[in-house]
Image 1 (tube, rainbow, N blue to C red):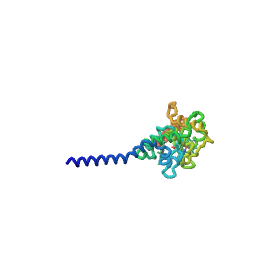
Image 2: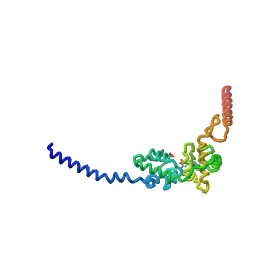
Image 3: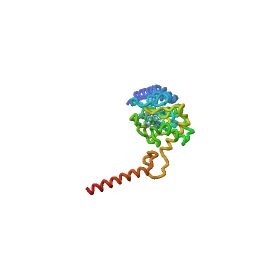
Image 4: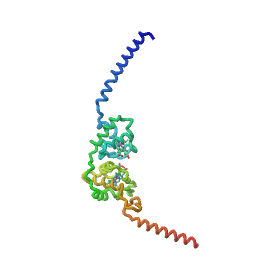
Length: 240
Ligand code: HEC
Ligand code: HEC
C-alpha cells in the first residue's frame, strides 16, 4: 500500500475513534454518576405484585405477592430479586446489579415498617391459640377450613418476615390483624412462637406429625383393638 493512503487511513481511523468516544462519553459519565433510585424501581417492577407500599396482594389473577413489610434483611431481598423464588420472576436480566441493590436497600429500610423485636414466647403461644390455631392448628401444621373448603397452609416453612407480613395483610380468606387488634409486640410474640414451633423440642417417642394433644398411647390402644379384631376375624374364618 502506498504511504499516502496509509496516512489517509490512519487519519480517518483517528477521526472515527474520536467521534465514537464523543458519542459514548456522555453515556458513560451519566451511568457512573446517577445512583439508581430504589423507590422508582420498586414502583416499576415490584408494586404490581407486592402492592404500592409492599402491603401484599392476594391472587385474583396470577399477579400476587406476599406482604414485604417485615423484610428487614437486605440480603434476603437481593437474593429473592436475583433468583425469583417460586412464582416470582427473576430480575437478573431485567435490572443491573446496582439497581437490584438499590431496590433491596429500599425494601429493607423503607418498606419494612413492622418491627420484629421484643416478642415473648409464652405470650405468643396464648395469642396463637386465640387468633390463629382455629385455622392453622395449635402445632402450626395447617388444617382444613371445613366451612370454606380452603386449606390454611402449614406454617412450618414460613420465614419470620412472611409470618409477620401475613398477620397484618391477611392473604386471601385469612383475616387481617391490624395494630388496633394486635400490637407490634404481640405480633412479634406470635412470630417467635411460630418460629419456635417449627422446630419443637422432641422428648422422644413418635411425634404423630405433631397432631396436637392426643397421646400416642391412645393411638397404640386403637391399633391394639384393630389387631384383636383382626385376630378374631381370622379365627372365625378358620373354623368355618
Ligand atoms: C409477578 C409477581 C411478582 C413480582 C413482579 C415481584 N414479586 Fe416478589 N414475590 C412474588 C411471590 C409470588 C413471592 C412468594 C414466593 C414464595 O412463595 O416463596 C415473592 C416473594 C418475594 C420476597 C420474599 C422471599 C422470601 O421467601 O422470603 C421478596 C423479598 C420479594 N418477593 C421482593 C420482590 C422485589 C424487590 C420485587 C421487584 C424487583 C419483586 N419481589 C417482584 C411475586 C412477585
Ligand atoms: C380464618 C382462618 C385463618 C385464621 C384465623 C388465620 N389464618 Fe393464616 N391463613 C389462612 C389461609 C386460608 C391462608 C392461605 C391464604 C392464601 O393462600 O391466599 C393463610 C395463610 C397464612 C400464612 C402464609 C402467608 C404466605 O405468604 O405464605 C401465614 C404465615 C399465616 N397464615 C399466619 C397466620 C397467623 C400467625 C395467624 C394468627 C394471627 C393466622 N394466620 C390466622 C387462614 C387463617
